[in-house]
View 1 (spheres, rainbow, N blue to C red):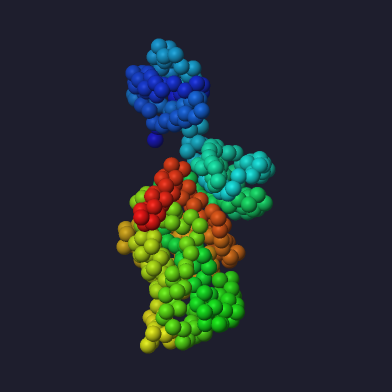
View 2: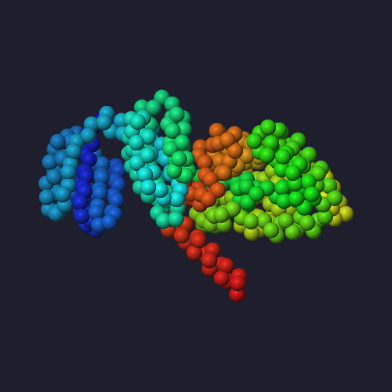
Length: 409
């Protein structure tokens, strides 16, 4: 561990394309080792921060600073050099940084509300910038939560503040795993596609009200999913296979689902669909969007009609959690490298078994175990929490348009 002081070089002013080259030359020629650097160039302005240390243990910080200032004199930059003790540097390293991603349609006053809420907790914003601007606004804040005894209280306040402005918020630690996630697991119904397929089948079988009632109770966690599924499937007995085909054709993807899947695949993610619905429909979604894995329940079809029974084991919440873990192991990934997205009680263990769980347009029971939540119009916001840039997302949307034009011709 380094016990010698560090030199912190900083600059703020008009953008100069040569400042990094000039400063690194001056630092290296002063027999200093660069241990960290950050530069931002926006709107013609430039902010530079560099941390260096003497190469020789016998070299004093004061002498090193004198040499460095002498070297910097040859360049026309307004630079400052300060000496920082190891204790001061360690306090920076030991900070409990939490990343708040705020997502929604632009509203006047949202930033004021969030910054004031943080100030009331005496929590400092270490860094902040827009990840996206336009129809969907995405703001990312690094917050130092070192002094907080209970982070969950702050999360609740920020979520409530965002709710008042119609924004979503996702909160996660600033850990190395934010950049290492490689598998995203989705629920299907009400997540990747709009609505519940079983409800559409029930309408066709004239048992819509009965099935809807059971579905709502199951999603809210009021009845065990397995029991609810068996009850609902029994009500579908006698439904012709052609009706399943018609429902499959009429399925609508959730707004942003195609862009999300396309972008994540471009970024190198593996994608899985683990559904409490049916393979007949999940396989169609897999073919349309290009999922790598798909797991769902299998309806028994006898003589071209639904028998009212299921084939094989039911994919309930325990099975969803187990399957996620098995896929991660097959891909050679740790729990922290896995993301799960779902909407109901049946997704609870799946989210808990992932390193990063997102409740999408979800019931309250799932929101309590999730790291963050997204509402119906903000599925694209997931991309920004997983390292996508505005340019990456825009290219995916543009590619979708090109593909649609090719199909039309």
